[in-house]
Image (cartoon, rainbow, N blue to C red; front, side, top):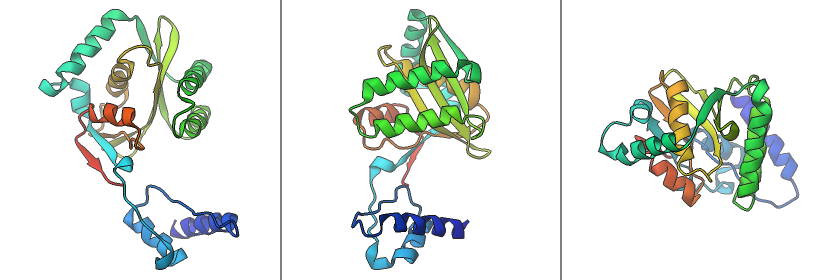
Length: 220
């Protein structure tokens, strides 16, 4: 594996040769950083840390049961949403793929001006189209039959579930809270933790993930 990583980094270097552009690698572990330094030389590598890339780690059982005063407001919001909307949940399959792609396109139309939105939209489209090949799990959320949210994740190991994408039509207040809770109940109950990834420095995403009451944040 080390040889493959070194070969990949060298291939990237050749692509940028003569362009004088800075090559940036994100989410490197200390081990990966040492590998990069061994290729480029210590003096050529500058390492920076940022809380923008810290991973939010959630306690799955807490997220499912929502017990305690810290989850009082979320319980109220979920109950209010359930009273107001006739919603359904279904696993993502080939039969509802067009509905999932519709949610992705709607999300991008609403967020096209935001940092990284186009990359996120393309990545999600690939994940949807290669769901089985990549061994991913997904859920589709509908309100009155209309597709309004999708969630994609995958088991990371026996204890940790990895959430990869969650996109929703936020014209429905609190839809992200409700759908995340529903996805956890249906897909994550056998895991101890869920890794929600980072917030990329996006204020709204940081607020949402912080309000999930993470068990811890892990620098990456």
